[in-house]
Amino acid sequence: MASSTSQPESPSRPSDDNAARRLLDSSARLSYDPLTEVDWDTPLDTDFHGTSPEWSTLYGTPYWQELTEAQRKALTRQEAASVASTGIWFEMILQQMVLRDIYAKDPTDDTVQWALTEIADECRHSIMFARGAKKLRAPAYRPHRVAIELGRFFKTVAFGEAAYASILVAEEVLDVMQRDWMRDERVVPFVRTINNIHVVEESRHMKFARDETRRHLARAGRLRRRVHAVLIAVSAYVIVTSMVNRKVYANAGLDEERALREAKANEHHKSMMRASCSGLMEFLASVGLLTRPALFFYRRAHLI
Image (cartoon, rainbow, N blue to C red; front, side, top):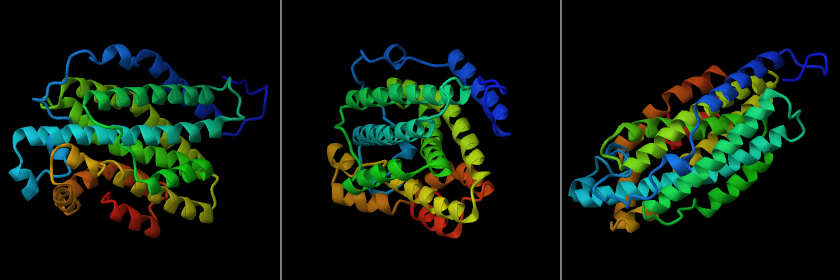
């Protein structure tokens, strides 16, 4: 930890360093190596789902009622792989934003060392998700080209609370659904292990993202806060609408066009998404980021 006598510090620095040191200690005590923790060798058992069925985009629709159990399981496995692929895409954006934030900072500070630890975690998570998707017999699902280019722009221009609150949005949405999946014995065991690893390690990342969002907002003016509130909301919309690729339906042997129509109108899934984001919306409201223009995008994404 940098000494207060070696360089000037802001009033928030000691508290920031203490929080970062606790996160580093937690990481040292409780981290996983997916290469050894996940059972990569046992062949895929197609008698299992890839996600909790209730989280499927078609659950509760007339089409879902027509599907056989085998078709439902095939669909949730493809959906799980699509969520994992989207996770990889955003984790790559996340890593670049965090690296840019700490680029010229003191590497002996605990906060910078925690940021590097988080980046290392995300690298391992991306490999874990990629191997998991492959084992689920899914292709490399990629977001729509527009989403990819928006992500390229966002990771280049986002800074401060815009970067860290967007990181929090992606992590919070995944966290709630993965907590359900990791406890669900209907989900294929290796996916449950992947979800457990991600939930445990991302809990530290979310704590850091909340703290960094608050810290950056403490010196943000009214205009910057309002602009960033919309930027965060747009990023949330792009992330959430990219989670399940339309090709999952055809790859599960379903009628893609019909599945898309029923998924878009599925009130059950919209309700699940809103419930999963209640804590996130409370946080954004508490720090003044839930403005009226931002609410438009959160409602479009069915997060509120």
